[in-house]
Length: 430
Image (tube, rainbow, N blue to C red; front, side):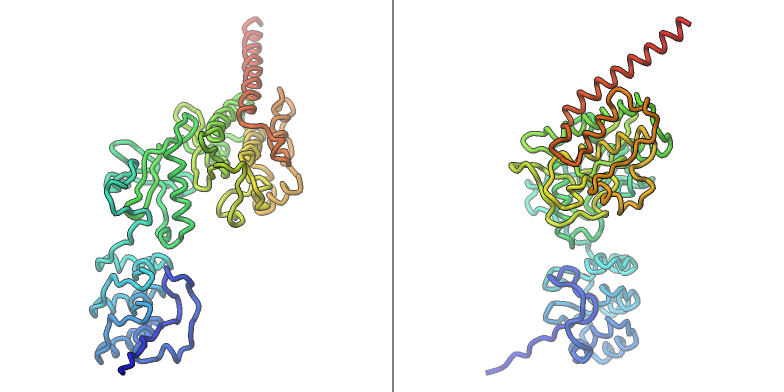
């Protein structure tokens, strides 16, 4: 009986970007020096002269190991641009797939080897299929936008650098582009899908309007209305402390948008990243809540809990409720906590605990410390300070709902407006 020789496995250096276990060395150099995988070993080492000698001697440039990996895969992982170019000139297939479906282009994107990406694309490498791609045209979402309709000619980055301006059918829009590594990260694909699920449900004058998305090709994108006045963070940096009447007016805009989200039926929506750079200004001077990248739907359960601890990459520590930082179960009241800090910042003119490093701020919240009230007491008249203190209470159940907050703010706004009218009348009489 003929015994079939098993193919060797190349296991040095960076492995497939889609492999279940990435990175690390699976064997020693002697294993890699097996004649069948010597080409891959030299690609890993960046030895162009050695590769030329092997190919001149008749080695197969498209040799695959037991995992379907080729020398081009290895060179793309390692960022060996010169080796990639050599292999392609000598007839290497540009889009071979390994056992996990990864191609050299996918690997180069995952490891951020941008020069290799450009070279592979120049030689015809096809970008990977979008993770949300559907085979049946009837399953394409109604909100799908043809990426060719998005003109980025005069594009500039806005809000945290995650959104760019583009022109779509003659209108300026904001476009959030998902990174090239998205399709290799299931968590990011799920987060993108969850964000779309939320956005297509939302319609409110104090929430940024969702216009559509690109999901059937890469890069995937989310398209929303563009608000040229920028975000509240930039506005506060420019203006500093706001007049109480302006701060309360802005607070009402935020509270109305948040109340809509929290009272959304059949599922409440928790923003979970409410902070000034995620609140945008429109041309009329009103505010709109934006960026639902880490938002949560409250379904049957009254609370939610993260699968893993939240990091500073997910949210701004200066505005995060202590229960989120401690990775405990939480509900809509985390947004009320963040709202209190934003309202106080509009009165004080500086971010909460601005003197502390950001990673130290949530620890202060856990120890029940709160940013001090430094502004003149008259700026907190009519119950404003009391409202803030109730909203950032250490016990979430004691914090008011946004419906209750709106009622309180409307009373405060009425008193402030009355006071202004009284001052104007007094001035005229005098």
